[in-house]
Length: 445
Ligand SMILES: [Zn+2]
Ligand SMILES: [Zn+2]
Image (cartoon, rainbow, N blue to C red; front, side, top):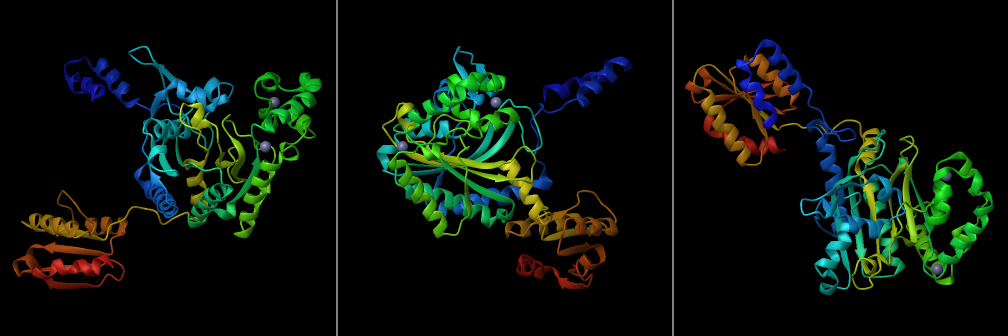
């Protein structure tokens, strides 16, 4: 409101000042990396979100809504202090009481915090939660990558059973199948081992990379000391070259981790879900153990990860809860929407069932009453506010995709009738005004 006030007051200002004011008002713009989702694409968003919710609920998941901000510490401790997200991408602020708070860069940390704080572990052994909402990361904006972006995610708490890993991947895949994008994506799978086998693998990796340190990119030289696994997914050509022959986590898993991975692989094969083993999946976050997976695409350029997830058995305890194994994933909505547009380019525009046109004197009130009655019965209708020609009104009815137009004319109304026009065939019939309500059956089909 504030910004528009000067314009209203500006009549007393000199013309020059007025121009300045108008310009200042016209210049409003969104923050770089943040975008609006406009009504002409929202139907598609609703469709994807509803499909996710419906399918996740079939698997026993319930929605959880968590705050957009948390104490910075929650993210630093869960995502890991030496990750890109925590090091340079978080929107952190000092709150008025001096505490450091952060706009959530991902959903898992907040869900885990809520799980602990609300003692959900005490209410049932297994908790299955999903969330949808906006996340914030200060990255360089690109196609499919924004600073304010939406994710859908799911987390399953309370079991180490590999069936849980399988179930969560199957659920994700089922959802992607439902919205018909599986021809554009692939599933990549790996294991990051556990506290038994990962430390010794890390040592092996560092031992292999240390003599080559000077050939690594600047980032990876630093990563070698703090987070060597990340070197495996560095996008720099020279780092890719060097790490090509590095020891693989998959060759260094302990027996239990191997069994766990085999189980997940078997169950994917049982359900004919194709996957690629990719030992370079290390994820940008520190909290994963054992199973990790990514859904990738070749359709969106550099931003090729559509969804990702894995097992994180230590995180709940790390954040102060009881030891609770967990597995989950998150999906990038913007990228999923781009893929969905490729498969289903049209058919998600907002439309109405019927349009109510009025012409002549004293017809608007009746038209307005009809509109109210139809909407009350669950029929979507639209009408004009101002008197317009019938031609203009029918054009609008067409544009809105109305199947029928109900035309309230002065002369017909005097005879207790209205016209109903089938917008597809252009045929018209007159009906008694008291029959209009019964039209709703026809309109809802
Ligand atoms: Zn590198
Ligand atoms: Zn292991």
